[in-house]
Amino acid sequence: MGAMMWHLKDQSGEAIYRYDIGIAVADDAHIFSDGLTEKDLKTAANKHLLSPVSERQIHEEAIEVAERRARSFPASRIVPKALDTHIAKAQASRDQDRKQILNTVSQLDIVNVGIMDLDTEPPENCLAYREVDQRLHALFAAAFWPFALDRRLQKSMAQALSADKWRTKLKLKAPSGGELPGEGDLVAGAICRFSDNLTRLELDYSDAKSETIVQLDDLGHKLEGLVNLAHLSLDLRGCWVMQLDGFAKSLATLKNLLELKLVFEDSALREVDKLGQALGELLSLRELVIDLTRCMLSQVNELGRGLEDLSNLTILDLNFEGVEELTQVDDLGRSLRGLGSLVELRLNFRNCESLFQINELGRNLPALENLKILELNFQSCMHLRNVEELWQGLHGTRSLRSMTLLYAQQRLVWKGARTCAKAALGAGWKIDDDKEIGCITCDLEDVDDEPGSP
Image (cartoon, rainbow, N blue to C red; front, side, top):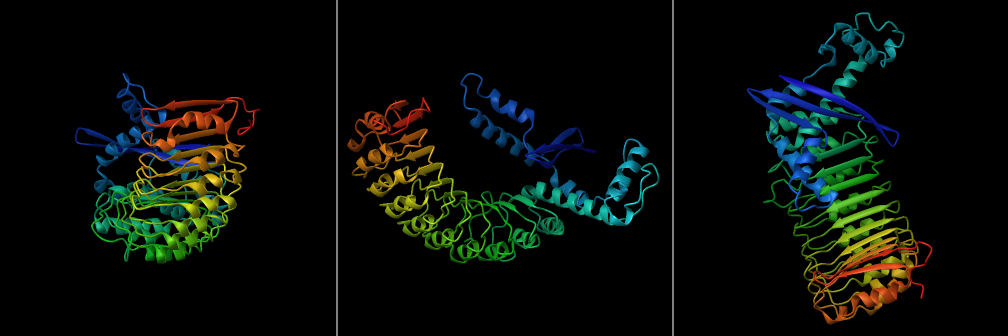
């Protein structure tokens, strides 16, 4: 026995369909929801009644609760039936409702535009029914994709996805232990059918099997056909990505990209030169997030040079945590000269044990004339020789409104960090220094005062 409930809400002028699917198997009830339920949030919050945490942490833990609930849903029993649903065969609590619903849908078909009496027997078939069926099948396929390990079932789901030619957004998470990008990748085969319509694509392979080397070339070739893609997110956390040459070449063709997020955490990636060159071609980018945590990089020069031409960038978030062989970021620092539109900058160098120089980074901070939020992490950077340029750069960053600086408190170069920050930022700032973890948080109290003023 099963039931489905739909929600329609308008957000930013766009209609968003959401669903809850409930099914009873024997004496057990199972719920599959689009997003978090109130119970998910309450379960996460109840764990911290005695030790309150941030709403963000509660939200993250609620996502984990929802994922555990979703994994218990008997998807293998539901999906084949879900992909074979037909609106013309649907039932309603009242037959009059069934007629009115089907007649309303059929009026979307240009052939049946003249139908006005919604209480008459609806047509048996029409093109509008077919469109609704195809879009509904694709919705089911996308929703249950993370839980379908059976290859035959995945093929059916991929076919359902590719038939939805009206789709503008697609978010897929590979099943735990599922296929990675490469030849025969069903996801890549499906997305190439969307062509002009797709504007947002999010692919998450972080739970997929990782014992083989990932080949991104085929996925890249498929992306080239998405000429209107504006938002791209690719999560390859834990996957073996050895090189990005072919993928980067394809990425450079996506001239309409506004937001790009690439996660290569623990991916064994050894160089990002081609990626840097590709980024230099994406001149429309507004937001860029790249996570290179614990990658096997020794330099990011080309990546830095590629950023310099992104004059429309407003948010830049780069994570180099644990890149142990990284020694300097001069080109990255020099790239700030061309990023005058930047409003938020986040750079994480935590555990970059070989990093010894950040002079260019500090020297070019004043070029960020619109910067409001700055977050820098140098914890466990034990070989930094001099941070004087950083303090001087902060002194000239007059638009700043909030700064978070994490530092290696056991290093002499950070001695008197709070005093230095206060002197660099000037009057009107509230500055807190947590010396136990080495963290300075600075917020402008009076927005009429200019940061950096004496």
